[in-house]
Length: 383
Ligand code: SF4
Image (cartoon, rainbow, N blue to C red; front, side):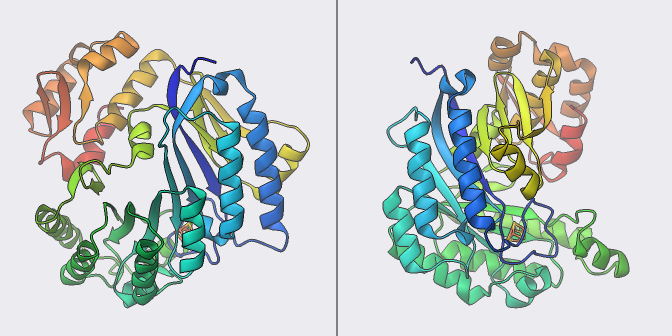
């Protein structure tokens, strides 16, 4: 079979040992039997999706186990799931990027070695902060010591492609405590850093706390100072910013996420996972029992199915692609959608360029240094 298009494969493991106070991801504390039911439903869903003609023509360059906390599942189970995925879905490259997210305190050296042997070659560690009072304020289960232990154990297990997730704008955080987390993290020489500002999601315990105490989170000027401190700290390291919130050594960009930002094809497995292939985006039901019921009854798991028309898909590709510092190619967009970007946005685009928020140089439209801190507002103007 001719593989027509490169794609990413995502497995959503919807379990966490405890729910963090700020979390709006679909994850739940597993009940007795949930892990087994999940694995068996996932196998059925894998077999079903792998047999679809629109999936069979995809060649997978990346596999990503995310969550939730995938390391809530034993390493032997994760290894077995990976083995089955590789058997059922065709890879487009002999060296696919295979990532698993782990949280400190949920994994030890033995399990990490088993994952490495099974073929996982990239580890994304949910460090978040290296200051204990900030971790406690977030409701994270682990301490900074456990985070450092997990990083050391990952290196010993042979992972030479490590990414840390860090967050700023946290309760109890100051510019100097953020600087301390950054400096310690950079000293550990990760190949990749994802650094996100904490966002208060409606309906979370954090949202209720923030409403009760308006001074819970650092003020905007302090958050801007944290962003400036990030730029200075990273400038002295081997990492380069390649996306609004992501930094990597040359050659260690997260290929899986770059495919998302290029609005490429992907197949998502598990509850709440999103797939985009054959011109249709499908989102699986975000309810564990309902997911089990539908898979076992042979019913579609999709809760939402959306076909984007050409213009909507074009705009979406522009907006997501501008998250990358390399921006978007006018020629590639013209080839893919038959639309000319400067003509399509007209004076609207001229205005953003005139304000110094975007730059159109030769073939590429990119966010400028002035546009990066206010990227959300700039991008929403192009939706
Ligand atoms: S570990 Fe991650 S997915 Fe799990 S509750 Fe915390 S933030 Fe959410």
